[in-house]
Structures are given as structure tokens and as C-alpha cells.
Image (cartoon, rainbow, N blue to C red; front, side, top):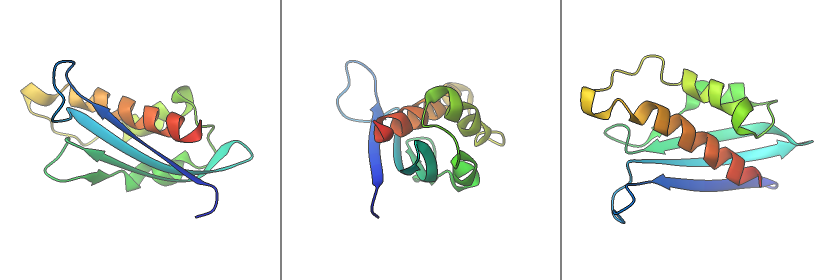
Length: 106
């Protein structure tokens, strides 16, 4: 698509170069500095890559800043049922998705 931008963020342990703790891909389109369309996918948070379709439409009209998009992205995890050992991934995944959006807009 014309005007589409994308970014990929991989969060991993400092000493590890193999597996991501969390990864996020964002493809966005901007119109007058605001998100007009977004597609967000996360990796390493479920058994398969997870598309955040339930919040993508809510990103439209927002500026591509961490402060604007993070609250919307956090809503995607409202029904999450993490295990004790991976509960930290919820905040990490929302943050990675926000970072991917910001980087895509840069």
C-alpha cells in the first residue's frame, strides 16, 4: 500500500541472540500525522503469532506516540490468562507493540 510503513521489534535477554521473549510487528498508514490504519502482530506470547485485530481499529485517529497507543494496546490483554512464570510478558508485549508503532512512524 502506498504510504504504508512497518517495523519489527524483538525483545530478548541481554545474553541471548536466539529466541525472543516477545516480538512485535506493526504496519501502519498515516494521514496528517495520525494513524489511519494499523495491523499489529505479536510473537512469543501464545502458541502461534497473535494478531491484535480487536484493538487495531481503535488505533485509527491516534498519533503514533507511545503515550497515545499504549493504553489501547494494553486493552488487548484484558482476557489474558498468563501462567505465573510468563505473566511479565503482558506488559512487555504491549510495550513492544507500542515501540513498533513509534518506529514505523519515524
